[in-house]
Amino acid sequence: MISNLPKEVKSELELAVAVRSTGNEGKARVHARRAAGWAIRSWYERQGYSKKGQSAFSYLQDVSNDSSLPGHIREAASHLILRITVHHELPIETDILDDARLVARYFIDKD
Image (cartoon, rainbow, N blue to C red; front, side):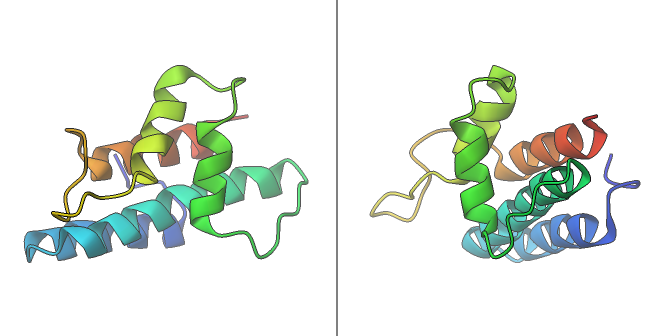
């Protein structure tokens, strides 16, 4: 599923999987967020929009609030920017790697 993604997006997803396998879910979230954010940035750039200096988190915030996008994409983006609880857990049941893959695939294939 990640074979034809841009190199930087694919690399971040692979890193997310690798660090998750060592038990570092927090770092996996960081890599998943970057992958999705960079895929969104790539789409903006293909559309001729320049948002230089914007973080992956900011791109995900934009997507989660964009009512012109499909609900499942907005929801997946919102999962990636959720704050963890005081127990260092997500407040919902979701797989952030699946969410990142969904968002990345949508924006890479979008046009």
